[in-house]
Length: 53
Image (cartoon, rainbow, N blue to C red; front, side):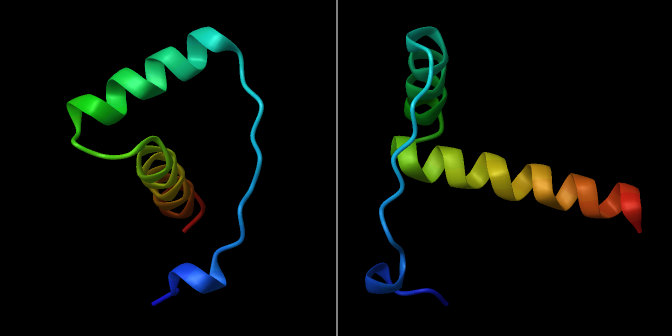
């Protein structure tokens, strides 16, 4: 498992409407914005791996 100290901050610029959508999605799922983005990226990675397997 990756510790908090091993994760380096990453600045991300995005259009305001995308951030609003992500904020809403994170709130609906009971996650922070960061956790929601990480979860979405993990899901996309898993989906891509299933397609290429």
